[in-house]
Length: 91
Image (cartoon, rainbow, N blue to C red):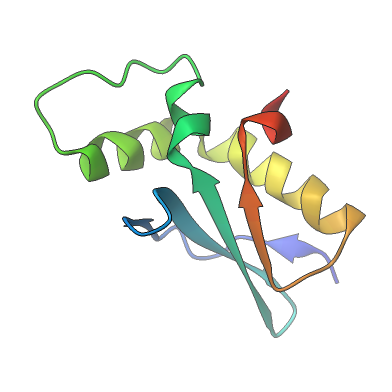
């Protein structure tokens, strides 16, 4: 099977300072975290009056396709249950 992202939900994990989203490989659930720093360095404008959570979730939404592409490549290299995507993964 290949990795799919059928559920568009995502959440901000304050403890990890990252946006969490889920991928599925058949019946297996794979958790992904995108560090806030990676989103901040994305070039998406992060200013505004919203909370950090709202700001990072909006950045994630704007970059969803490329984030899922990076997540799929990470999963193809090394199949695990959880991944943390950092700025280095997006270069």
